Length: 87
Image 1 (cartoon, rainbow, N blue to C red):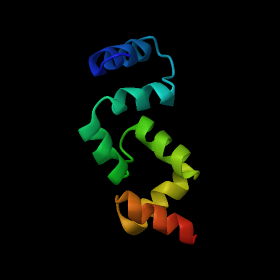
Image 2: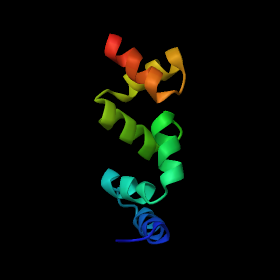
Image 3: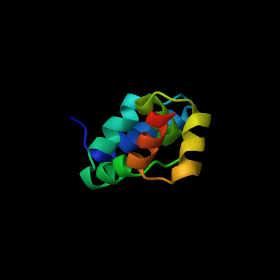
């Protein structure tokens, strides 16, 4: 298993080659940092493309639907999930 630094270096090398980074690699890199991963699961971030992609995939919504939910209830993952369930 790769450590966090190895994952980050691997992702950076893919980015330098202008290759798309599979979401599974991003998740694996994040999983090696339990404090960060725990925070990431509690708050929906729309700032980074990989985070936006991850949230839309895990919630089964479009980017627009996710952005509307965050605008309506804030960045709390729990509140976003509730909002999307009701719609």
